[in-house]
Image 1 (spheres, rainbow, N blue to C red):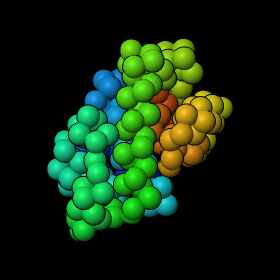
Image 2 (image 1 turned 45 degrees about the vertical axis):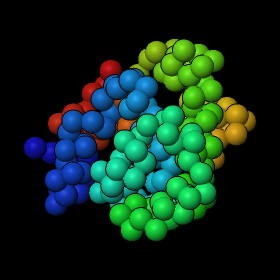
Image 3 (image 1 turned 135 degrees about the vertical axis):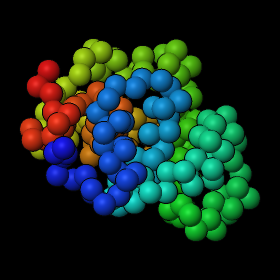
Image 4 (image 1 turned 180 degrees about the horizontal axis):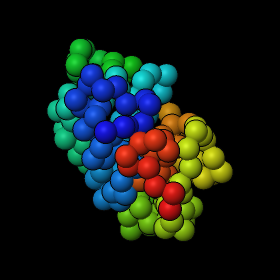
Length: 180
């Protein structure tokens, strides 16, 4: 089976992610929240690095319980900074707490985070290959930054949109490639 060029065939977690999750629409708010956290930790790193630590992130961040994360204090931040199983970046950890509060605010405003995303996507899937940003990632990134989120630049948001299935970018040779 031919997969996207970026998929490390020596890493079962990567193959599983590629085959069963990446670019597959999943608009459940809990998933959208988890992926936004994980994608923000990717900034400056590879997705494979984050993916390999995903279970540790889940454990360290209380199973991505937004209510708990919104209430993290300095003691919890210090605990996370000493956890060798996750990416220990104080700016990203603090951004996760901040972004969680904003994510929750968006949920309150729109009913769900996906309802917010639909104001940009018109509930359509984009099929494109070979890009790292586009008009959609630019617009969402700009709005999230205006709302106060950190580590949500256009490249991160583009990756996020691929992860949740708003953008389908499987290589033409990949067995999961679709044109529309």
